[in-house]
Length: 83
Image 1: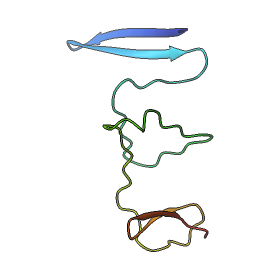
Image 2: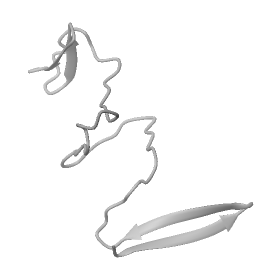
Image 3: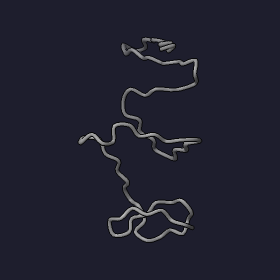
């Protein structure tokens, strides 16, 4: 797969880093983002039709935020604000 795996042992724990020649990065476990996540091109969600795979939007505004492109929850209907 042209991926280089670099292993390092420190304080009894084994760490692995992956390097790809195509500038892609693969996360094999959960990725938690505590602040903003900016996607510069396309966001793809795979396997969403599986029963145990879901997308959750929590804390969406319940009225139109008047910000173009922002999602909001209109009584259970997902909407996109026109701005």
